[in-house]
Image 1: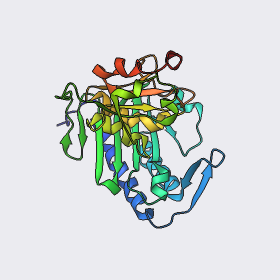
Image 2: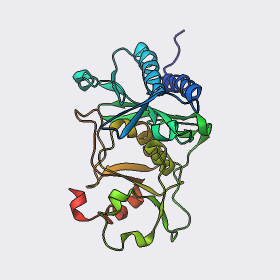
Image 3: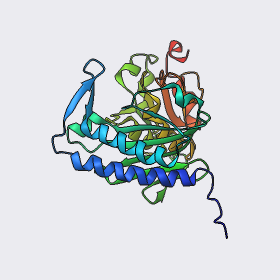
Image 4: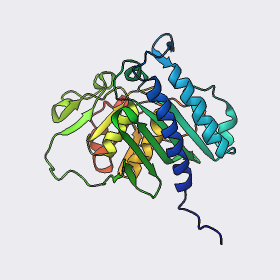
Length: 270
């Protein structure tokens, strides 16, 4: 008797969760152990030996199990092969490497899966915080074993808690910040976006030049909780593009997106 198929993407997510747990173990084995670090992007971006070890582990496990899927990782050479694949793993071995090498807990292993450009499954493993975030399309979003709700704030007049990078704040309308509580975003963009899905934050403006690997996994958490990730013109993000870098983005609920985009100078919406 054949086993019934799980819901679409559920098997992929189960594989991704297992791989991310193995990756998190590698991360913790080097955490606060003075890992070897070097710098790329003209010295702006740190890379640790744990980033490389995790990248190799994830590719071995994930592509080993799904050899026909494509691969895009921050720490691996990109090729055009992925552009011809229907499903693609999009990975950041350690999102928040600066925090990681500094011994701070706000980092995670980010593993996303996209199909035909749309994010369909994602895992954020943040072992130093004791957290595993996971979601797949149509299956809800979870933090550890607690399902995240999609309710709007009951306090309609409350000031919105929004992460606004300084580079974005410079391009907002005069007085735009007066109605917001600007909060510190933290070193991991993926965890910052997850905080929107969890209702901790009402919105996150994402500075230009963020990449697909920063966002693919967290984007699934958003879509499963009534939130959205859009560009300055309100368009949903499309993944597995030839250039993985993006312009200014916003993560927020459907209800808040228009108002928060309206705080930007018009030049930021084009």
